[in-house]
Amino acid sequence: MSLNEQIAKAVIDGDIERVVSLANEVINQGLDINDAIIHGLNAGMKTVSKFYEKREYYLPEIIISADALYEGLELFKPHLKKNNTTHKAVVVIGVVRGDIHDIGKNITKLFLEASGYKVIDCGRNVPAEAFIDAIKNNRAEILALSTLMSPTLESIEELMKKVKEEGLQDKLKIIIGGAATSEQFAQSIGVIHCDNAAKAVNVLDELSLGGSE
Picture (cartoon, rainbow, N blue to C red):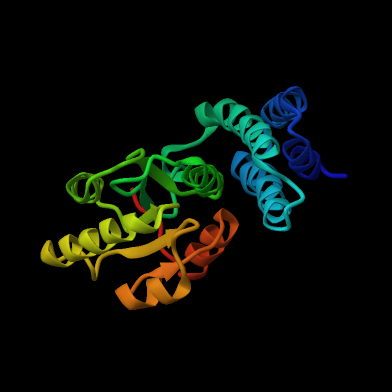
């Protein structure tokens, strides 16, 4: 098993000590850090996302694996060149106004960050104006919205109107998810529906969004 494969397995197992040991080995041997991130840390987290999609992993396993991944990233960061720290795209994420349930949002954030996206987390019960400000201030290319409660679908519709009023609709890819959402609702407002965090990452990756500064 290669060093990167061992790192991936340690992430899958949520073995922080093993990830730290292997990451230090990569650094000490002067190996390619980017390669270790992509084919080690990120590869492991992609497997975790597949396990989650198949309901073989749940929230506790995801958190442990994510902690292991982030420990590895922290060790690698000082050794990365600035021009190698670009991310795929900037994502503004949050739970819409009227809903305080954020487990799904938090899982999606973990998967997006682990897959190379910069995520701006607006939190929960977020008013439309706060999303708009976050999009503008961070030059976001993606807006990810979550809700578990049917009444708050109106909040999503309200936000879509403000996005159009601000002339942002052509600059954004918008995805929604959560128990209250559906493919039919997403189509009715012109956005993309993702029924789990792993699908959200896959959908955004398939859109082939370019990296940003």
